[in-house]
Image (tube, rainbow, N blue to C red; front, side):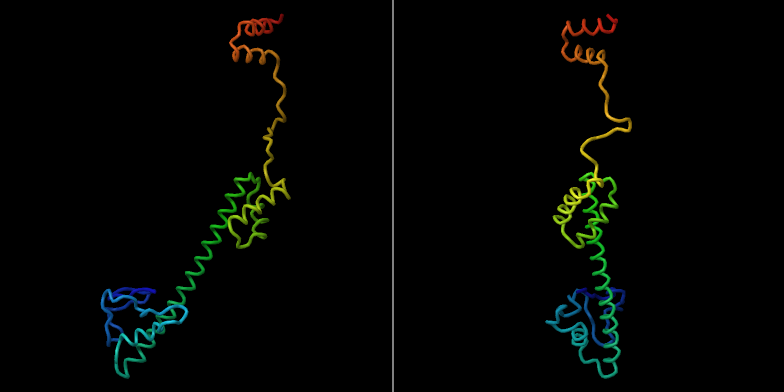
Length: 189
């Protein structure tokens, strides 16, 4: 619940100078403007709390005060709905981020396609569900993921020539005989 103090704005509704309907006052730092109302209806409503705080304002001030309280409650309801929508959007965005992270870690070739396939199955699942679905997708559709073998555009590596092998052997071992063997091969004889 929001706390209203003199001159503050609660949900876009300005409380002017701490006065409500000109009768009672809300003093700065007076605490919860709702008077302890709970969403499940255990306590008094915001309207009841404000009317009680306003005291006996007379017959003419009550309707205006009640209308203003009703407007504030309506605005509060709208803000709570917006908060719920934002929370749901944030949860969906976090799940999409986790899914993409899992797919990239698994080596997905096309993350968007793999994410679309998994999103249908997971729905609002947890991170553990996402990880198990990524593993299952990798088993069922391996073409969506990179293989363990790193290929090249030029095909598989060919055997190196014997001269290069002799040179590498001579450098690696430091043996004089390996060096002489390399030099003879290089000379052609």
